[in-house]
Amino acid sequence: MNERTNRSGEFLLTSPLTKREIVAGKTLPYLITTIGIMFVLAIYLKCTLGSASPSEIAKSGIIIISIMLPVVSLFLSFSLFSSILARSFKELTFVSVFFSTVVSGYLFFPAMFAHIHAIALISPMTLIVKVLTGTEISLNEYLFSTVPFYSVSIATFGFATLIFREEDLFTQKTVKKKIIDCIELFLRKRSYLFLLTLIFVPFAYMFELMSIVLLFNIPLPYSIVAMVGISALIEEVLKSAGIYTLSLKGYNGKQAIFLAILAGSGFFVGEKLMMLVTVASIADSVFGSVLSMGSLLLYPLLLHIGCGAIVSIGLRYKRYSVCLLAATAVHCAYNLFLLRGVIFA
View 1 (tube, rainbow, N blue to C red):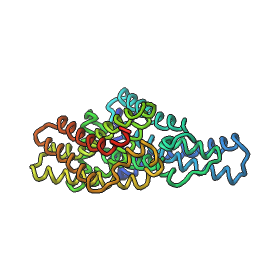
View 2: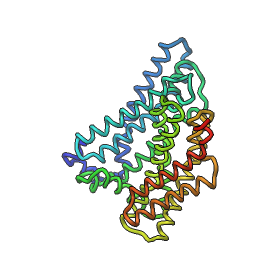
View 3: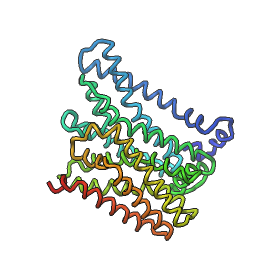
View 4: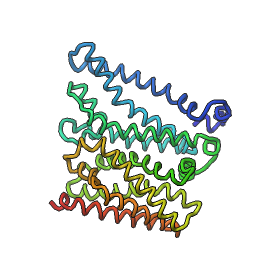
C-alpha cells in the first residue's frame, strides 16, 4: 500500500520485469518464510504430543506443510488483491480484518468437530489434528479440504496480476470499477466467458462451504433451506458477473442467449469438475447432499443456461437486480424440488 500512496511502485512498473515476476517477487519471500516457520512448529508439536521416530516426525512435518500451503497461499493472494482494490489504509484494514475473521472461522470452527462429524473435513485444520494425533488421512480427505484453497488462491493471484497496472494502482477507482476492469481484461474475447465462469466455480464452492460452517448449528430443515437460498444467490451472482461486465458495452438478443449458454455451460463444467475431486468425503451427510444434488447432467445444464438467460436478457433492459433475484428464485425452486425428500422427511 505504501508503494501506491507514495507512487514508488511506478518504478517497478517501468522496469523490464513482467507483472507476473513482480507479483512473484513480492509473494515468494512471505510464502517461504511462513512455510519455514510452520515446518518448525509442526515438528515441535509432533515431538511434544507424543514419542515418534525422527523419520515419522519429518514425515508429519511435510504432510502438515502440504496441508497449510494452500491456506497460506489464500491469505497472501487475498492480501495482494485487497491491497490493489483498497483506496486507503482504512479500506485496506476493513477488508483485511473482514477476510481474516471469515477465513479464521472457516478454518477453526469445523475443526472443533474433528473425529465427530464429516463436515469437520471442510477445514484443513481438521487434517492437521489428525496428523498430530497419528491418524491417517486419505487422498479424498486431502483434496476435499485443500482443493478449494488451491483453486481460489491461484485464481485470485491471476486476477490481481491482471490489474497490477498503473490505471488501477494509482487511481481512486471504486472497488466495483476495479473488479469490472479485472473481468474486462480477462474477457478479451467474449468466448472467454466460458472459462471465466468455470474459474468462478471454486469461489462459489468455497462460499457455500462457509455457509455450511455458519448454518451448521441451525436445526434441520431450516439450515438446508437457508443453504439452498444462499448457494443459489452466490452461484447466480458469480455466473452473471461476466455477463454484467459485457453488458456495459451492449449486446443484442441473440448475443444475450449466446452469453447465457457460455456462462451456464462454463459453470456447469466447473461444478462437475469440483464435485469430482471434493464432495465424496461428505457425500453421506445432509450437507453433502446439497452440494452434490447436481449429479444429474442435462437438467442442471439447462438450469444454469436458463438462469443465465434470465439475467443476460434482463441486463439489456437495465434490470439486473430484478432478474438476478428471479434467476435465484428459479434456482432455489429447482434445488428445493430435488431436496424435498430431505427437507420434508
